[in-house]
Length: 97
Image (cartoon, rainbow, N blue to C red; front, side):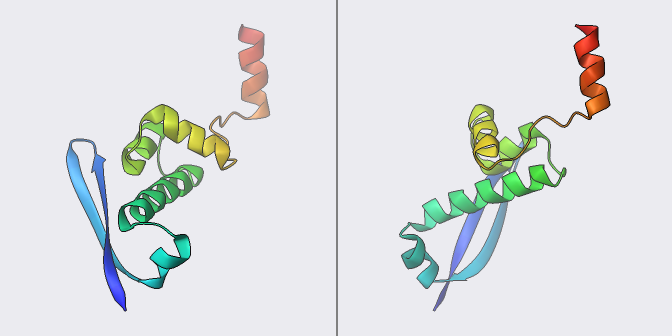
């Protein structure tokens, strides 16, 4: 049996919604409610899109539906580098201080 899972998020000032069907066994396997699974998927998608360079940190937190400090913490927990400086840029920054 499949049921619908809705992912709601605020992007800018507009609210968007993505709906997809998933096997009911997913909730049992994750031992979670539909809302909890939706939140996990929103955060996972936001982290991956940030990692791929498709979202900035502010947009990442908006998609995830969490405050920016929380999303930055989640990025760190998932091992995603939030500072994209080349060695040359880092040396330049260090010399400039």
